[in-house]
Amino acid sequence: MHYLVTGHTGFKGAWLALMLTQRGHTVSGLAIEPAPGSLYERARLSEVLLRDLRVDIRDAEATTEAIMAVEPDVVVHLAAQPLVRESYRDPRYTYETNTLGTFNVLQAVEHKPSVKAQVIITTDKVYRNVNQIQGYRESDPLGGFDPYAASKAAADLITQSWMASSGCPVPTAIARAGNVIGGGDVCADRLMVDLVEAFSAGQTVRLRHPEAVRPWQHVLDCLNGYLDLADALLRGESSGEAFNFGPDADSFVQVGAVAASVASLWGTDSLVEVDEGPHVHEATLLALDSSKAELKLGWRSRLSFHDALEWTVAWEKQVRAGGDARAESVAQIAEFMRLVKGRNSE
Ligand SMILES: NC(=O)c1ccc[n+]([C@@H]2O[C@H](COP(=O)([O-])OP(=O)(O)OC[C@H]3O[C@@H](n4cnc5c(N)ncnc54)[C@H](O)[C@@H]3O)[C@@H](O)[C@H]2O)c1
Image (cartoon, rainbow, N blue to C red; front, side, top):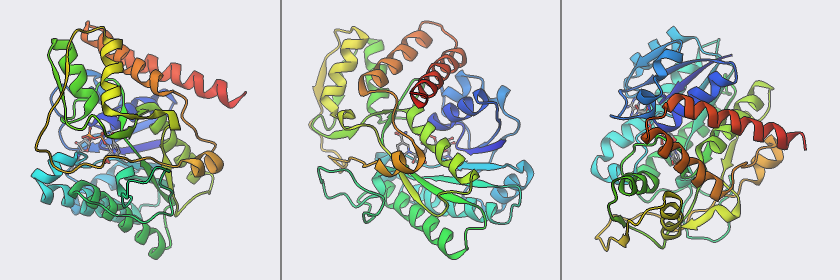
């Protein structure tokens, strides 16, 4: 199969492209330029891609032309402005990319006969957050306090409307997941990135919301869910639906506890302090109920919270010590795929 990954120059997209090639697929990518030091660059991703396109998804014509040229069998749409604090700084770019950009991808794919399945990636932040203890279900109302959450909720609704009103000419589904961690992330304002940077430099880490409870999931578990969903679409199942892909209940952990665990895995004397702010509003409790993905797709997380931290720290330590980023990622993907196979045959 030929997969088109939008946002392949970003964190999840680069891991997804490597995972797909490891599974024997052909991969093309569509995104804007990578951030300095990205996994895309460090893993020399352009070497494994069939087509590696620089396209701004805000440009409808360029997006359509690119998708026409690639002729993919499957589209996984990840490209987005994914950061809450950046969305306060530049809401227009966030709305244009996440909302109109998603619409442009849907329209570009609509009349592309080669495309047999399409997965649109939104987020756990699409739910109207009422700080409930139990996990959000796919049928819960959407909302969006900050511009990022609102833009993704709008993208989710646009996709739902497109799926319903266009008659879904291309089998399409929505995937919602929360915070993911893994080696090679360079996005500003993400806890794991801040911790790794500070600990490797022996500096003090300043936490914005140590009391906030978040789901922590390894990026490979989340991507495995996206691909299980694509496989279901290819089998003629689950089109027009949304699915949550969250970690197990023991992976909902306070930010402060995550920082302490990573410090101990890193073996650092660095200090963790509370940054009193002021800070922009960020959700304090966000949990997902993923029983639908478990029941209908047979998906579940394979790595525990602790495994996810360990794999991330191991990757960062290895690559920071001069290891090859692609080789390290490919080795973790192979180990992950062994886990998936082993547990599926249990
Ligand atoms: N990383 C997480 O914890 C997390 C959690 C929930 C949802 N998500 C979602 O997963 C997706 C990927 O997130 P990520 O963490 O890899 O982010 P990232 O910032 O690392 O990657 C974003 C990608 O989108 C591309 N992009 C940004 N603006 C673009 C534009 N105008 N046109 C074309 N491409 C553009 C970037 O070039 C990059 O390839 C996003 O849709 C995000 O909302 C991520």
